[in-house]
Length: 225
Image 1 (cartoon, rainbow, N blue to C red):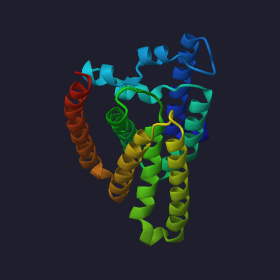
Image 2: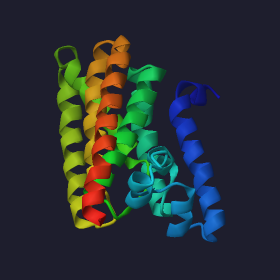
Image 3: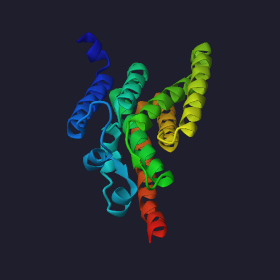
């Protein structure tokens, strides 16, 4: 219980994702691979539905859906590793703001780059958490010194490896990763300077989302009609 209390946000997010995965597995009739139509019905990102029909709620629901056992295990193990670090350096509101804005804006980036693909997974949000930690170490580099250099070396290697894997595998949505990473870095830098900046950060992200959401329908209409 002490472990859960210390990292309650991370463990709660992992638990919610796991329960939803089991439910999608039940509907798909398989624990290893999910039926794509089931995922769409449950709220996966799909451009024509999300943008043209105005089903923007899919930006949120898609963050909790995964395509198979490998997909969810990779994401949840990654969150387990970096999410606990996030809870050590940031308060609850900052963690949740970074996580959800990274996932939501990562989803919008995916809709822009891949208008006809089905988008699922927590990776945009998880990359946001990773970016937030980078923002934290950059913001406090004068005090943390060698710790910052060590983290940024590891950060660079992991990002480059993920980009290489992403560009080599069609099923990996690099745009969502980059979008989430960028949003998370901005949040991590701002909120580690002063947690009260959460209102400024949230306002900036909401305005960005509204701007992209206003633009995408015009882009999609030109593409489909």
